[in-house]
Figure: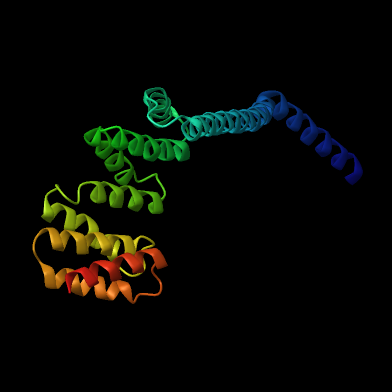
Length: 217
């Protein structure tokens, strides 16, 4: 008798299981479809991103090559336009590089306000590499060192002049030049003396500091 009841119980469990599968089985199918769709979507996105990065790299290299091969005095308008387009719509890393390169070209072409605007964009871009952000800030200050507001320039350069910043030596050199511009000779002399004996600074920069220091007497 026990065996008969066991068999009946097993049949009832099997019947309930079949009903559950018929009622809710579609959830498992839907879940599997969703997983497959997610994987396919991720692969497509990754492929598209790789293609976009490769295209951006090609455009950047082509623009850089054109700049290097151009004859002196050649208009940079076409290259600046290409770089501006990359800065507006390219992948994140190339947007930063394009802005920096375009800023340099604009400054060399006489459009300093346009160049300063691009350097400021990079300096304020939290998605950009901190090394490039600091470089943009330093370059903007350097290009205005002889005419910009001294207080603003000093406020911009001081954070870059700390010992652990990669641009420290260049920022300290600009602070010395800014001090000379304001007639603060002793401040400039102190900064230049420290810089001239700082063996972590590039040799050329130490030599410039020593030459300026010698000029001050």
